[in-house]
Image (tube, rainbow, N blue to C red; front, side, top):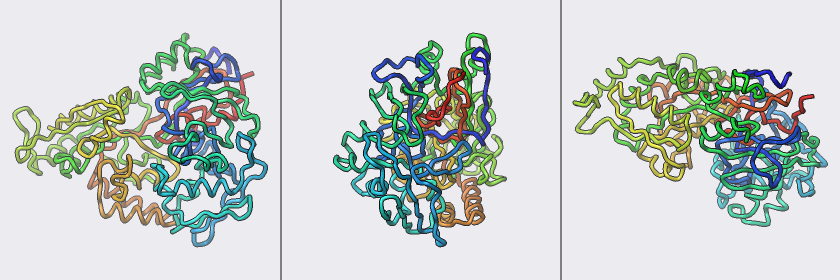
Length: 534
């Protein structure tokens, strides 16, 4: 490929990339400018990890760069061995998973990797004293035991269909991490892993710098230095890419479109990755307006999703009717909701919400009004929130859009709405259960709408405890149809992640990506396997 030709590579779902964290690259100790040769890369991302310890949730979707899991995903999102030598052997009752481990693997400090590290990682995460916000994802685990140095056996409480997908979780070094406090120790900022890269520095709020692990069991990466610049503001990230500060970055579709043509951008290439990443509005049951099912149903019909895809996403995405994308094999056909403002108004009329003098509806003296938060600097959420508020007003519902940091927003969400994002492609349980099951209310950022539907709870339990794909498909169909009748959120769009990167590497691809986009996502998901352009 010629370095002076602009190309837009829209990668199909069969060749898409998983992500998780936040990343950008440069030489250790350097500034966060772009790489100065074919052995370095600097990328700009929006999110910074809170920790780099897998014991506290870092890298749980895979591709963490510093660590490996027992399994990993290929470009088509199929599971394949990593620290394990093969996919697990599963017992007939679906409750025992046996993993044989790779021999000769060492951590970046030279200490050997063994079954003790696997047992330590999972038992520490499950320990009540460990502040891992994703702890509930391993609720099915009853025990994990070592059988010699190179075999690990998991026993589950019930046959959890998605368990193998959970074992992409990174493995920590027992020798290092066990000597310090799991929640506050230096392992959170100075991790030791078996992965292709070693962290050399982390300037909080600015950048993370990595160097290639010369003793990586998969072979030393060709990209010697990797720096992740943390730039939360979308406009600032775009400006720094344009100025040459960055080799690559994730951008909102409207900002990335400038790189699709024009001689001034001939050395850049754009990638569009299909995702499970959605945007939705939480409608908390603790709010006197949004707790009314009629209001929630009306908003579900009043919103013009196709217009949002066109205007907000510049066409880089599709309408969302629930956590699962419409092209997912688990999506329930017939649960699409068309834009129907007339029907939305009729639902509100019948429920007693009558238009006031200013056009905003009133019931029993209460105005149909609520606050909708989005994270400061997130242009994509801001644009979604403003479009949502505009559509809601046409139905007679006033939505006040307000920006704030995560620290400011989170305490308000028992009462106020939020323009949220989420999505995990590996298994439908990963999206539906934490977002919709009533047991997840109050668990971190899970089920922010405080949604509780008996049918949804029952069918989510059926689906996660069965290994029969047809049983699971039937249960998830019932969940999505119940959600259509009783929406606890207004799902808006599924978003294609758009990246811009210097056109000096060959063979770049993406996976189907989750919501989080950072160190483990984008065209650099498999950075360790990159080859420079000849």
